[in-house]
Length: 509
Image 1: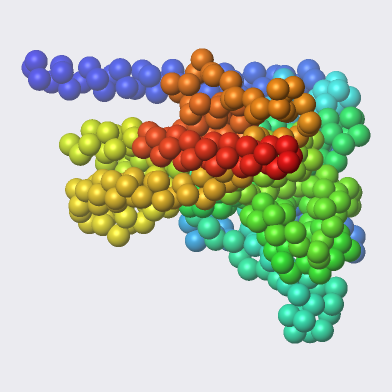
Image 2: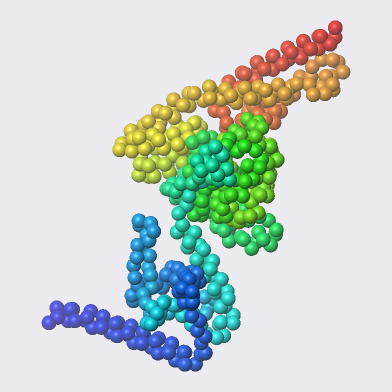
């Protein structure tokens, strides 16, 4: 008897709950019917085809919009169709199905009906007459904008590259772009970068997408320019791919070595489409090579977007290994909106790579890896990523190889900085060279280099070189390299002093 009661009580509660739910559903239905009796409604019909049997584009946009609403999933009956992509499934309204949408507090009903005689489908919009005057136009504009967003996400992203006139097999000299499907899998989730910086870039892009009216109001071209700078292998190209996938924009990669002259560069920009990423990689190498094909003003005008007036919603991306030697006119605000630095791999980036490549959130070798990174970053994310991919079957072996590679490369840091030291030598010589006759004192002897209160931190006198001090402060050299730099600087001082003394003796004669 007791067991019988235990079985029957939950059943009674379930029946009671179902009854209450059914009663509530019936009451809501009656209330809606009652509302329909008291309110005056207006109906609008949107047929699939016009009288000439041409497709009504508004019908297609409304269909796409309604099928994207969350309420379609909650419907009693909905059709499932495969999409254009292999893993895509689309929900499609059934005939005579009713959908209720809420917009700015107004309740809007749609019915998907089919004409029995002609077989033509139509959407019937039902809206209160008072609401129609307030929101109908705004609601239809909302459908248009949502349709554009959905189509942008669905479209196949393509990669365009510029070619020489001779490369066009069809002899059409005006065709300067060839394209292939862009299938790079990178996303913002897979990019190795500080999360705060990643969120800032995503927020900046999302704000840009919604800012058309703002750009029009202030009289500026609707575009955004980014500069990605850092050593090779730090993820600049991967980040561009992630931006393209995030925006669903086509990518136009311009190879400046294939641009014949200023007019050719203008033509390339004019032949690109709106909603696209315009990419120029290694701009610093091109500018430093002093190429005569393009004028400096043409590159500046290109960055300003003065020839992109025929298109909208463009994002321009420029990459550099270093921006230290670049003319400030290239980097000024307005020409570059956002500077993003891509450094060598530090310990936090290493942990992200270990998690994504090896599935490791922690390991007994992590403290040893962290200790190695504290001496300075000498490996790029690409180098560490390649080690992990090659040894993904043995995470311990991968970590040991990262440690040994980091240690061996750390020993090569002084030789790696030889180019920087040579550059510093030239800068120091320029700093110590006499730029004015008053550099010599009245006693006609060379003024000594002033003592610095920071002589313990920098080589004596080196602090006066504006081109050197930031490199020392930023940790561009390790401790051993700084000691070598002090010795090297001492030799330069001796050499410079002897040279100036010789010049002085010659002038005396």
